[in-house]
Image 1 (spheres, one colour):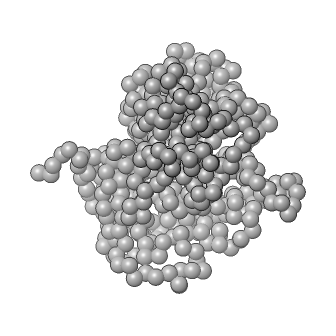
Image 2: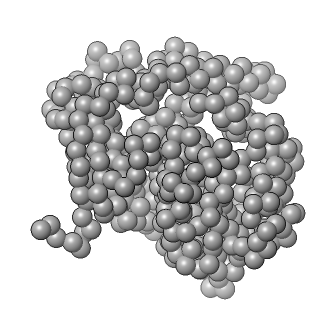
Image 3: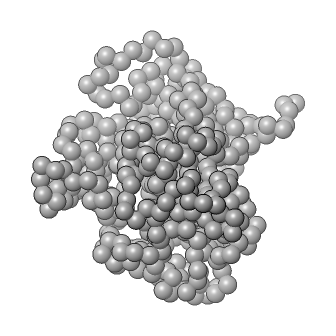
Length: 454
């Protein structure tokens, strides 16, 4: 990882940590100082882990570092770092367990859509494009370690493109990857969060649909704060609206970069700065507040009530009879509610991306008893540098088990297996051991559910 990446990540992480509840046993200033020290230590450990060859070995090094320090500030900061790598490896349930921001009620919460008259739940996959018809900028936010909050955006890109949206901007992309558009897929050099397969699929999908994909991360300002927000907005404006005033733009960003009003990091958000430059109305879609947390008491009470009453099996949004959407808090136009995860063979079924992808089962026979074993599925028409369409970790002892408990963990459950989630098409599967060794390669074809094998 580059030093610039570390600075950007540290800025985001520190703000998120400070948004958490400080320990009652110490002052806010003391807690902030502990977190600043933990962030510096975490950046150093993450850079050291990056020196290892192969994603899996990097994560093992990070897991060992995590186990070496149980102080609350370090666990809070570095737990988020670990969760990024778990998501990169396709271990989405554990990524959510390692770091998740609780959603307690806030004084500025709007009344629940269940009690506020006139709101009706609609599938988000149809409600949001309908809302977007009236806008030229649509903002989607995400929780960086919760790939679930990217899954709907991937599904919506096709219909938004058909509605006339022609630019796609992603926070994590770096300007130095000048060949992204001609290559057609992201690599390790395209950005940081694009190392996670769903994020890579989002960028890949935008490119295939014909969006002009924009990298807008700040490079000259500080790691966080108003200067970074302003620079991000300026980069978007210069690449899109300055030369194409009629452009229609989809933006993907983290957390409150997309809030349209209110104080943010002592200044204004990227979205506010962008509005100042463009004066173009925006639809802000909030996706980080209403998803299922590992501990139910961390869910917002509205989320709990909606899930119990409606039991949706796909993301929903609330809209009233006049077409006005419901949002939890000011600054956003509409909140997406993601249903509780359904786990099948260790993986969440939302990885199907609304039936765009199908489950393809693999087992560890081709790992030749080398564990842990990482299975990567790459599109056959992409290079070996491409971020895989999906990854699956196979192990007799899951990486989520702490070092101190490995000896106690039962490994008598037979040959590990699981499902890759893939669009119809041809893929190359790589079975990878430690030090990035290729243990086995094979080609597969994933059929459309309506097709029949020859």
